[in-house]
Image 1 (cartoon, rainbow, N blue to C red):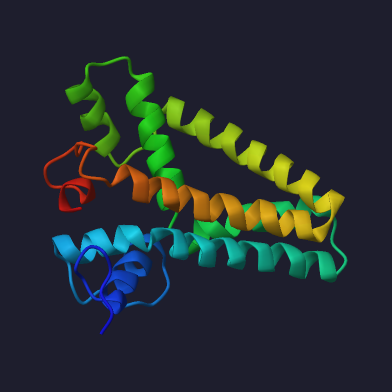
Image 2: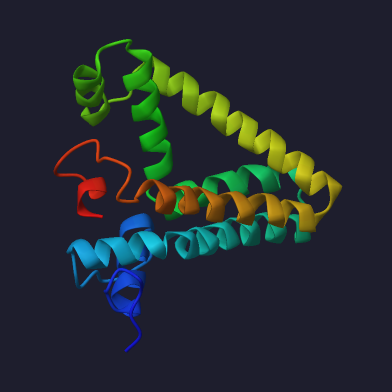
Length: 181
């Protein structure tokens, strides 16, 4: 059986990546350091699948005669649905923590709260508006540009996760995913 650079088997690494980063029905059979590391190495592949699903929704709407704006809204909505809003929740938490102006320990506590504060709401609003505007412009140019605008950022965002999960980057919390990888 093939192994990833982490030491986990490729199926375990893929299950970890898809089971952690998407709502796709994948049973994570291992939750240990090697599987987590392998999962983070496979994270861009999960992003590629999420981006492809988003692009498929946008292109399908265009094929049915909708305009670029509706296609862009669907393309922005699909990743939120396929990831349980994980990236949006994290963005809102980060905005609330950084926007609080509190010391690091307090900012981390704010980020862990389940509610969304004003900085999180405002950040989500403007980020989603910017995504829809950019996607609409891409779809207006051509369906191919719309597909690229959906797929490339989704894979690149998960590549950023892979790069952030390196040993040289300290974990924010001892019990979080960063500490596992």
